Every structure is written in structure tokens, then in C-alpha cells.
Image (cartoon, rainbow, N blue to C red; front, side):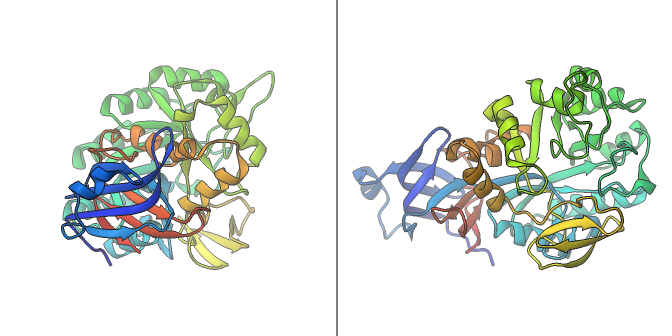
Length: 397
């Protein structure tokens, strides 16, 4: 259930700013952050009286910018491929309860018609304007233009050569809806598609790829700027052929997504990634599937049977990891516990960096005066989310 107060203030919190943590209060008016005050700031009490504002006692917890998840397939039993507003509400409600305030509806490798159906449903969902939970900023097409050698948990039956005509049709029908496309840049016609994506303002990402180092550099020259779930489903690093991973680690033009759940990537590899890439070039994602938020059992991902045991999702056939059951607050806490990075640095990876990739850096991703009040209030150990706000609306408590 969402709640709306035109003017409110949260006091007694540790506010995670871009480069430091400040103890104090945040003031929100009509969905916008209008003031940030340190504790005992007299101006806070003088300017914002208790009678005029709803006052929330933050009880010494942490206040973070809302998480931005650009790679999420579903949650709490629902999948974006269902192309249904009820399913989208379920996903957005669940992930909002874990601190996500903006997300991309992520598809799997599927038929032209199935992908088009998702685009139509996502467009209608956004235009409807309801979105009472985490906001849907657009769609991430993960495939179908990927490598047959690295399908991961994508259905190989629907892998396709790059089809510019499909993208042009979808872009014409739903202008601006597609925000990211994952493809294998070594495939014939892929570099030309990357150039077109860059011209359209769509993030071109490498993933499920057998690309050599030179292939990734060539694609980056054409406008590729992101790697999906770095280390997973891509040609690995070798000292004589650095491969996809080597190019991602060393090319400063490329953002690197990472699934920080302790299953997809060893913590030493995550440290290698964060030491190789600038702090503003790493993006935390969940890659969550419908099983996120539910218990162990059998599930479906793009028509493929998935078993979840101990919170780890794997294909029944072949045993490949099949997305995750991760949430953004759990990924954030994993980074706090397993890397030497500061909390503001990790916050950037969960919020500011993906916001920048979506072109939303002037509106969301940071706690700052003038920004939209997308906020997450947690305990000091980042285990419990006490509240989530999207545009100043409390969408979870």
C-alpha cells in the first residue's frame, strides 16, 4: 500500500551522500528533496515545523538512494515475460520491499512475438501511470542475438542472428521504451547493430558471448558501453587472449554489471573487478527470476525448467545457473561484507551508476537537493528495509 504526504521529513538517520555519510535529516516536498540537514542544525527546526511536516523518526538507521536494477526478470512468483500488469505489480511490489525504486523489465531469449508482447505490456503499464511500487523505466532485451556457445539459462531454440529490422520495428512502435539490449558482438551484423543502438540512445551490452578481446574493443568503438553479469556466460580471461572478460576489465568505456550473491562470482573475482574498474563503472544487478522472495522448489524461466535449492537457481537440464533469487539490499550487504569499498562507493554501484546509464542521473541515483525523493531506509547492517519511497511516495513500510 502506498502513502503520499506532500511534505515530510525523516530525522535521526545516517544519510549516504555521494562521497560521505552525514548524520541528520532529509526534507521532502512534493516528491523532491528540498533540504539536507546535519543533526542539531537549528535551521531544520526553524524552517520545517513539526505541525507542517509529517515527521519520521529514522531511529539511527541508514538512508540510501533508491536502488536502480537494470537487469531483473521477475520476483515473488511473477516474470516480466508474462506480459501482464498484475505480474508487473507483483514484481515491482516485491523488489520495492527490498529497496529497488527503478527497474528495467528484462526479457529472456524468446520469439519475436513473445518479445513484442512484453514491449506492448510494458509500454501500457508505464503509460497507465499507476505504477504504485518500484518504477518501470523501460525494457532490457537480454537476447535473442546471443551466442549459441554461451546460452547460459537462455532458451537456445530462440537464439537469432542480429535483426536490425526487428529493432527498428519495435523502436517505431514503442519509441524510447527499449533502454538496453544484450547481444554477442562477435556475430555477423552485431557491430552495425551496436552503432544503431548508440544512435538511438539505447545501451548496447555484451553478454552470452564468445567474443575475443579485439571483438569487444571493436564493438566499444561502435558504441558498446556495458557488459551484463560480468564473468558469467562470456569468454574468460587468458593471459595470451584476454577475451571478453579481459576487455571489460580494461576498457574504461565499458560499465560492468555484477551479480554479488556469492554464487555467480567468487568474492576474489569481485574484488578484481572493483580494483580494475573505476568506481563509477560498476553496476550491481540482481538478475532475479520469479523464484526471488519464495522458497526452494521448481520454477520456469523462458520455458526452461529451473530448480531452486538453498536459494540457488539452476536449470534442471544441464545445471547452468538460471538467474538468481538475489535482491538489491542483499547485493548491497554482500558488497559491504566482502569488499574493502566504502558505503558511498557501493551506493554508487547500486544507484548512481545505473541511473547514469539510463540517462536519469539528473533526477535519481543520489540523495541531493533537487533530486527526486527515491529513498531507502534500512538498519545499520543493511539486513532490513524499513521503508522505500519513490518520488516521495512511501511504497513500502
